[in-house]
Image 1 (tube, rainbow, N blue to C red):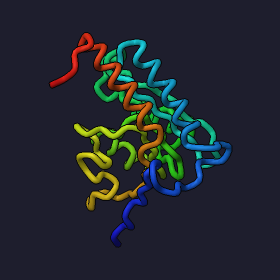
Image 2 (image 1 turned 45 degrees about the horizontal axis):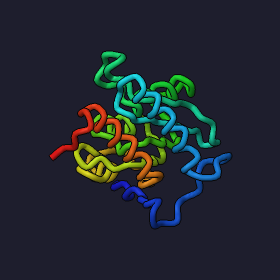
Image 3 (image 1 turned 45 degrees about the vertical axis):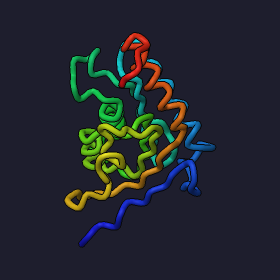
Image 4 (image 1 turned 180 degrees about the vertical axis):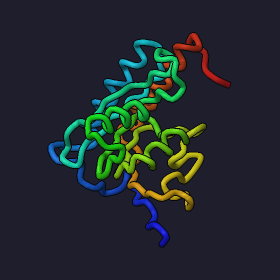
Length: 178
């Protein structure tokens, strides 16, 4: 049986599905993810933050990027949040959860989101180089995957993108890429 295509919503133009209970908006949740992204930047990590909420709106996990500080190439914010949420739920399946992340996930994180059975992904800034949800791959709709999840894009995209651009500009000493 073929899976239905993922439902996709753009925060800049579409009517969005309701956020999890107890949350007035996806922007309120993204503010938490941005806090974690800023904390990651403060320790020299790429500023990416991720939040996972239960179907009831409870914060199950919060994480910022940490591959450098943890000496672990898999320590992306999404991966760390998935690990925390699974431990809290005592289940590797994160059914009906919502993940909110400041940057479009890469292919590694896409795989983890699929295997964890996250119900909805909300992200801020697109990642034109390695984004595996929309930018480089139609991740949620790849025909060989056994799980689909809804996607909400563009939530606070400008704020998320600015944080990333400023971080990398400061790492290059203020030089812009040509």
